[in-house]
Length: 222
Image (cartoon, rainbow, N blue to C red; front, side, top):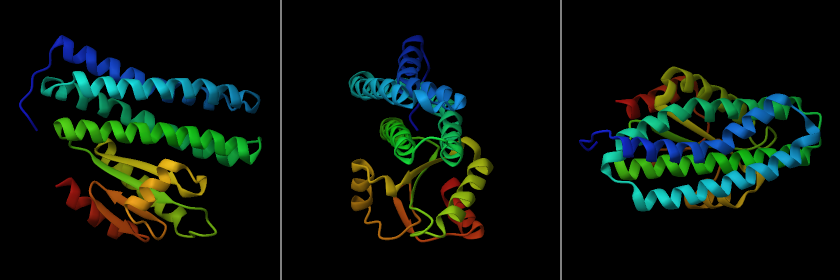
């Protein structure tokens, strides 16, 4: 980590960046809590507008951010972790209890996945600029038929997400959605089985139980 000081300009940049990146997530989370199937398409359309704003924010950030903003950016990342993870739980519960068609549920999951990838890219960029203390874990999973261990792996990761609180960021990516960016990641990291994980720069393929997962994560937390 570089030696940095917070100043008013730095805080404004970090806050503005965080507001834009997270506004779409907050919007989707609020709408999910209402669980109204009739408004799903309008939610998706509105969220797409926010997602485009996130892209512009990231491009702007790459031009104006300096080392002086590192502390503020890391604080901003930490403050948004719980919101992102909680929204993932909401999406999962919504999928399990939804009274709308599967296609609409998948559309909603795809929009959430777009937001998740956006946030992962932001965290990676902050790490490149400043270095971070967080462990970033991409979790690739499939359906119960082709991956009977994926449910158990998700439960193990949820456990350690609570144990390490904001120090562990879990980004679950559903391969069955067949999204272009997820497919690119699967090909880039040569994922051949599910469940699989990318933890910072390392790839782990196949199921890891609670004990083994704990040992793996402990190495990254030291």
